[in-house]
Amino acid sequence: MVDKIERLKREKKAIILAHNYQRPEVQDIADFVGDSLELSLCAAQTEAKLIVFCGVKFMAETAAILNPDKKVLIPDGNALCPMAAMLPAEFVRFYRRKYPDAKVVLYINSLAEAKAHCDAVCTSANSAEIINMMDSETVLFGPDSNLACYARGFTDKKVVSIPAYGFCPVHKLFNREDIIRLKDANRDAEVLAHPECNPEIYEVADFVGSTSKMYREALVSNAKKFIVATETGLLHRMRKERSDAVFIPAYEEAVCVNMKLHTLEKIYLSLKNERYRINLPPKIMTQAREAVEFMLRARETLR
Ligand code: SF4
Image (cartoon, rainbow, N blue to C red; front, side, top):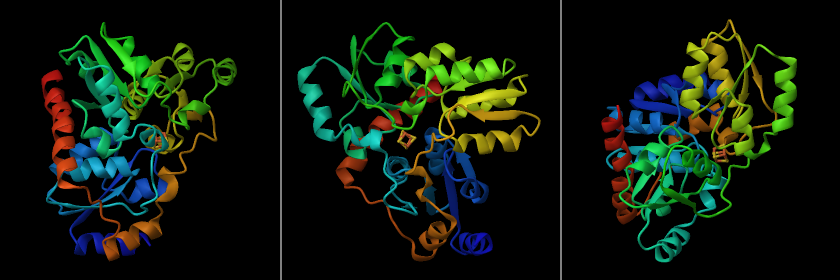
């Protein structure tokens, strides 16, 4: 299957992008592995006209939004993010009416239709920076209420979660007491946690950051043991680069079933039959692109 994928990829001059939470074998055949921002940037910079995007649908949509002239495929069209679905576009319109003076920042983990109604998009790596760039005292932020809570620690603005309850079902699984027990049993371990976890997890973590920041911390840290509180797919990448270190999942069942829908066989079929293409209405593409490009320009400023 790997040979067949490689051959088709060469023939069609395609590239395969994989999120950090993908199955190990999918990460291993990808041209680039990273978080949602890194993958969007890679999609924007590649010369390839055909992109097979192994992540959940909002990520492939973001790649398509930034690349209207490229064909973006997702190997399994059912790879949806339940957290993104918690904020339909009509909710954003409702909250805009309720807070007419507020700006709206949406986490990249949101539907394209919702992004089309926001002022800027952010990732877990730059949420507070983007919020601080808004010229309003109140900022509506969604859909992840935990990431909103994390960002509040780095801003004086009033950050209102839209909706109040948005969450990632995978990151909700981590339990503070379990992590304390793991820390007691592994006193030399560094605890890395994702901001989508509940805030009580931040208190027991040594480092809180996006998957790309957690990965880089694992590469530069002097620690030889890490307890990792995010989807278990990230551990594959960490173990590959730090074979001298031990990586312990903070909870072994923290698996995103949607991310894991993509398999080698589906990637092969996606390349062969050029399916399933991301198609968005032109108006949504244009409006959402402005919000995503705000973040990309801000990224240049913040460097
Ligand atoms: S890990 Fe959570 S936020 Fe990421 S795709 Fe899965 S459900 Fe959505």
